[in-house]
Length: 207
Length: 207
DNA sequence: GTCTATAAACCGATAGAC
DNA sequence: GTCTATCGGTTTATAGAC
Image 1 (cartoon, rainbow over the protein chains, first blue to last red):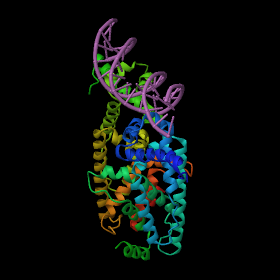
Image 2: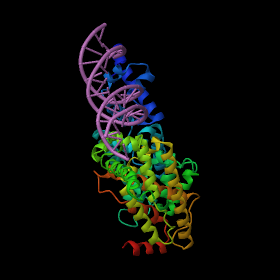
Image 3: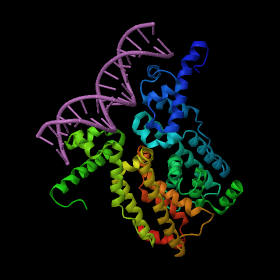
């Protein structure tokens, strides 16, 4: 939508170009190190033109996030450990492609209430997804019963925490050893909760 | 050291006062929302005086971190699950008292290489600590053997990840439910790796 | 040490000409 | 839509009086 003909196409192409350039620069230099002048400079347009399309830096980051969440297709509830593994890989790719966002996740929540709201919404969506998946796995006899009240909930939180902060944590590790993938963290947390049946199934999936 | 008599005491007291005020403001308003003018204004000193002691904002944050790591006593390797629980509570208190640092953990790594270096050092220290603790627990028969190569290592990473990012993650959760403590996350991750003996011991400790 | 005063360089943001 | 010009605010830095 928006991309129709001639003049209208132009309208959006500059706007889209700004978002693309901004995202690239954020990924390269970090959100704080990128000024509006940098973006317009790289693009070869004037700062005035840039602020015509986006009044504030805040508006740019919000537009990028809107685009991100627009592209994001809420995945189906995984019905098997194989589908769970696919979900982990999907999340990992998504995080990698939007590294700057997860690098600045905490800070961006402080930038605007809208971003804060969106983060909260994504968190709620994902926690529901995992809750349902855990219920399925437990019913299918691949996931152990809760060993104490709240175990599932806290395990899910550990998974989401690892997903969100995997990027900056990996950077922290870098000098010590090669950073693990999110997939590895996720299965390491989940593995001890699997039944014998579940463990065998996982081994088949991951080789 | 440095605090001796008269004039010499004065030298450091202003410097210390700046660090204390800056840290308080960072905790209250967030690192980015605090200007040098804010700090000098709250203290009732001139900006010129502030920049006499610290040339750049970067220097202030580095000095605060130096002080933090100076105060930090590297704990003994926990020899029992009770001592492990005490370590978790100690870490939790430390994180809470320096909330601003963990809120901005990823961003501060980008501010200066020195901070990045210090974070990496702390990470290395802690990973060693947990490795040794895990070995002790396994020898004492309260921790299961590794069920796959790297399980201990990745479990430790999950613990450290939760420790570092517990504060911003708790803020994200806030609207959904009451945030769990770091202690809760830590034991939720560790519990499934405990032997029956270990699980019983833990129940006695935590009630 | 502490203060005032000042200036350069940069930032986000706005107004108005074309 | 795009541009130039400009504003107020910030960090950073320097000078010099007390």
